[in-house]
Structure formats: C-alpha cells, structure tokens
Amino acid sequence: MEDAIVLYPSAGMGHLISMVELAKLILKHYSLFSIKVLVCASPSISPDATTKYIASVSTTTPSVVFHHLPTAPLPPDSSLKVEQLAYELSCLNNPNLRHALRTILETSQIKAFILDFFNDVAFDVTDELKIPTYYFYTSSASSLTVFLYFPTLHRSTKEDFKDIKKLPEIPGWSSFPASNMPEVLHVRNSYIYRRLLESAEKFTKSKGILVNTFESLEKRAVSSLVEGLCVPDGHTPPIYCVGPLISTNEITEHECLSWLSTQPSKSVVFLCFGSMGMLSAKQLMEMAIGLENSGHGFLWVVRNPPADNTKQSVSGVAEEPNLDELLPQGFLDRTRDRGMVVMSWAPQVAVLNHDSVGGFVTHCGWNSILEAICAGVPMLAWPLYAEQKMNKASLVEEAKVALPLDELEDGLVSAGELEKRVRELMESDTGKQVRERILTFRNEVGPSMEKDGSSVTALAKFIDQIQVSSVA
Ligand code: UDP
Image (cartoon, rainbow, N blue to C red; front, top):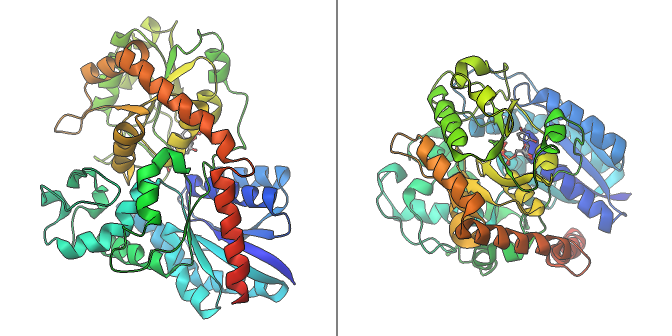
C-alpha cells in the first residue's frame, strides 16, 4: 500500500491553484507520498479556466494526480452568493467524495485528507471512513483569527454585525470595527451566517490547520493562533504556516507584457480585481478620471459592470466590455502613451513581476496579495467582498505594505481619492516607505521556503504529525 495525501479544494481557481501549489511543495520535499487532488467540478465557477489549468499542471507535474468528481448541475439561481454556491456544491459532492475515497483506500493508506474551508461538510465522510482530516486555509492568518473567534463573538453579541458600533476585542487585532466583517456575516439570521458559524466551529474538529502565509508577515495573528487565544473555551488544532504558495504555472506572452516593456522602470500602476471583482459603470468613470489626472502610467483590467449592485460575479468573466461606452470620451487616446486597458483578464503574476510595474491597485484577494509580496510591488488596497476588508486592515495597519483607498459613504472610490493615492504611492516618502517594507518581506519569502526556513519547517512538523496520527 502506498501512502497518500488527498487534497480537496473548493470550486474557484484561487482555491484550486493554491492547493495544487501545496501539493507541489509536499512533493518537492517528500516525494514518497502519492498526492491526489479531488476536483469538485462546477458548472458555473470558471469551468474553462479550471480545465486549462489542470491540463497544464498534468503536463508539467504529472505526479499530482487529479480525480474529477462528477456533479449535478446547480439550479441557475443568479442570486446565489459565491459562498453559498461553494457549500451547495460540496454537499452535492459528498456521495461522490465517499466513492472516490473508498476507491483510493483500496490501494493507498490516506495519511491526511486536506480540505478547503468551504468543503467542511466532507467531515461527514472522513469521520465515517476514519481518515485524519486537516484544513488548508487559503487566506490570511489575520482573517483566520476572526473566523476562529467568530463563535465567541456570536455568543457575546446580540445584534447584527451591521448594527454594532464596537465589537469586543478580537485576539490578534488592536482594533477591529464591525464593518470589517465580511458582508455575508452582517445579518445574524441569514443562511450563510449560520453556515459560516458551523464552519468556524468545525475548525476545532480538525487535526491541524495549514495556512497560506509566512510567519514574519503576520506575526501578531500567527502568535494569537498558535497560543490558542482565538478559541478561548476550546482546543485550537496545530497551526502550520506553509506559505506563500502562489501560482507557478504562469503565462509569459501577452500583448500587455509587450506593452509594459515599452514603459520606464517602476512607472506603471496595475489595476486588477481578482477573478470575480466587478465595478459599476459610475465607478469605472471615476477611475478613468482619477488615473488620467494622476499623470502616471497604468495597466488596467476592465470588466463589464454587474447588472445589479453586486461587486462579485459568480459566473466569472462574461462578455467583453464596450470601452467606448464605459470610459470618458477620448480617454484612451489621451492616455495612449502611458496607459493600457486590458479587457477582462491579464496574466497577473507575470505583470506584477515585470520591471515596469511600480504599484498595484488590488481588491485584496489573498492570492493577489501574496503575488504582490513575492514580486515586491506595493499596493493600494480596495477590498470588494468576502474577507478582503480584514486583509486590507492587516496590510495597511500591521504589515504596512499598502496604502488605503477610502470609499465614500455610498461605496464609491472617487476620482480625487484614486488620483491622490496613486500619487502618494508613486511619488511621496510615504509611498517610498511602503515600497521598502514590501521589499523587506519579499526578501524574507525565499529563505522561508528553503530548508530550515519557517514554512518548510512548518511543513516538516505537519508531515511528522501525519505519520504519528495515522499510526495512533
Ligand atoms: N488573476 C489573474 N488575472 C486577472 C485576475 C485574476 O491572473 O485578470 C489571478 C490572480 O493572479 C490570482 C487569482 O486570479 O491568482 C485571484 O485570486 P485572489 O485570491 O486574489 O482573488 P479572488 O479571485 O479569489 O477573489
């Protein structure tokens, strides 16, 4: 029988990519394990991108084996939030998961089953099959402190988070306004709130939590987690900070990369809002004005505005935007020499690593943040959804590798605010300090991922634990 580690990412490219990078890290250091990734196919979350990505990994790293779980199509409910969709998918997949694990068990001893946050309903299956189960948390340690503390917060408050002026203190944070809570948690009596509450409690059932971060980036949050402060009346499983794990299967040819090569070193601000971020038509207009007035170079990924007021699209990138309608008249001509607009998608890792890029306006998705840190590009933080406000707070206040972009009361970032912050990042002493800070962190990434570095040492501890746990 071979020893296997089985990974179970939830639907969505960001989750799949970082799980696959975890698989590669394990294989690099412990090639004796066979690694299997169970892919929960989704009819609506980036199916084409997922297929292409898996094909490319299978070619470059054939030792990572993918098992595709069949899934029934979901009802085409456009109001379904991404979090709910991810849960529904994993519930539907439980019978398929049981079947897949039973098949794997015929030839392998599963030393560890590592699941993603949204797939925790899989505990029903792994408990039954007596498989040691771990989490891979694909976001910041700072947001993990809040999720682990969420049941305590729930018990100590009565109102909806959206109505609470001051929250009780959260371990790992010097201050935490209730408005930093993800929007899906604002109302207590919602399906997602109750589901996430159950999820937060389930963390403590696991044998350990791997986190996609490195210790020196989030010292305070990591020590609160390790000291067990976030689960005051329970047990915190061992925490393993094994990051940063970012995509290494990256495109190297794209017209925007050729364009960047015509621009001066560190002169261009890159604006990109993750795989699902969307901005209203009014917001796009304000941005164009702000960018034009800033006088700085820019590479801007523009998507069609959403039909409703949402900032997040479940169905991924849809139709190409009509730039003539969305941007101010003559904008593209006037900024031709120093600006480029890309429709819907750019090869972000390659862009961030291009010498011409000097700043990054980001929606604060954790993968984007890690990619910027690894490239040493300072950020302007503009969170849109999920746990991104917490990531912003941690980047701006704790790590100090980003400047904030402040919204008006109606949620709009004005042209004036964008212009001011772009100038601050690219021209001022404050911007220079942020750049120096991020370069310090970038220089820590390499050593943390080398033998005896903090992340590889954490991985070694995890491997020791799975050997012991599966014997016990
Ligand atoms: N991404 C990209 N090009 C784009 C938009 C996104 O390559 O135009 C990649 C980005 O590099 C990152 C991922 O998509 O790896 C987005 O993950 P993140 O966690 O930042 O945000 P999410 O999409 O989960 O909100």
